[in-house]
Image (cartoon, rainbow, N blue to C red; front, top):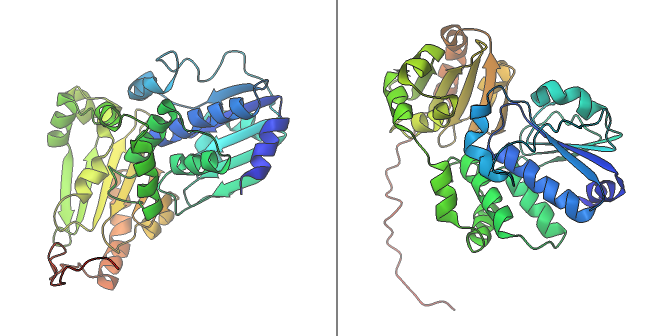
Length: 342
C-alpha cells in the first residue's frame, strides 16, 4: 500500500515533514517516527520537520520526542523554499498546516498520512479512518517495510495511541490492541503513561472553575473554559487537554463538548460521544472534522453560547433518533458453562 511513498522517499534529495497546528502527541509522534523512517530509507537526504504552534509551552510535555530534549529540531533555520517531497501527518485538511502550507504546496511531490475524515489534499493520500491514530498507521508502515521497531519508536507510537484514544476508551479496534500488545514488550509503558498523565494542581483548579452545564436529562454536557479562567487558576493550555473526555466519562452522558478559548479569542470545541451516538453532523455543521463517529472537533470565532444555540435542535433530533441506552444485562455475568477447548 505504501510502496509509492517509500519510492518517493528513496528518490528525494530533500524531504519536509509536517503536522497540524498546535500539535498533539499523535501529530508530533507520527512525524518524528516518519523522520526516522525517511533517514533509514534514504540516509543522504536532508529531512526537516515543521509544526505551527503559538506557545512554546504547548510542546513542553513533548520535549522527550526530540534528541536534544527540546523542540529545536522543529522549524530549522536553514529550511528550503522548495522540497522534493513534502509529507503531512495527522492533518485532516491543508489549512491545518497553518503558516507552513506554502512550503508544503511547493513540494514536487506531496503526501498525506492521516486517520481523520480527510480532504485528500496531496498527490499521494494514505487515509485510514478505521485507525485509532496516525501513529497506528506509522506502525503499519514500519511492519510493511519489515523494519524492527526500536524502544524509542515503540514509546512514541504507544504515547500517540494513548492520547488519541483517551487511554483506549474510543477509536480502538482489535488491531489497535494487537499493536499495543506488541509495543508493550518493547517500550516502557509505565514510563510513557507517567509522562502523559501529568495532571497539575492548577489543572484541577481549572476543572473546578470552568463552566459546566447539563442538558436533556444530563445526556449532554457542555464545558466552557475561558482565558480568564485559565489565568485565574494559574493553569496552562496543556491543562485543558482531555476536558471532553472527562465530560464523556460522567454517568448518563451521551455527548460531551468542551469549548476552550485560545489567546487569539477563538474557541476550539472537542466533541465526544458514547455508545452508538455520533458527533459527525455536529462537527460538520461547524466546519470541523472527525476521526470517528465518537471523536471530532471544530474551531469557531463565535461565543460558545451562540454555537450551542445553533446546535441544540440537531442534538435534540439526534437524541430522539437514538434514545439513551441503559443496558439491563450485566456484561460481567454469563450463564454459559465452562468447557475445555477442542
